[in-house]
Length: 110
Image (tube, rainbow, N blue to C red):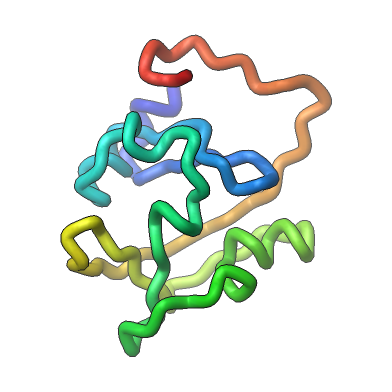
């Protein structure tokens, strides 16, 4: 179901380890799910501000959403691809609390 979402979607755990990457995200980021899964999202996908400056980890929406335990949405960042090109994003980070572990049945996942 997550693979069919038209927007780029990346799911990480509370430590920031990437668990799921859908096809739309792979295309936007020019990186395969295999390259991202298991990596820290902040290290693997650097965010830069509109001036091109790297956003410190503590200031990223991913960290702030977990610290505040609130949904954060913003259009003031860009993602930097492996080839160093950037593209603007509208980012929404939403902490989700699960009572049971996430069960994954996708063959692309570890």
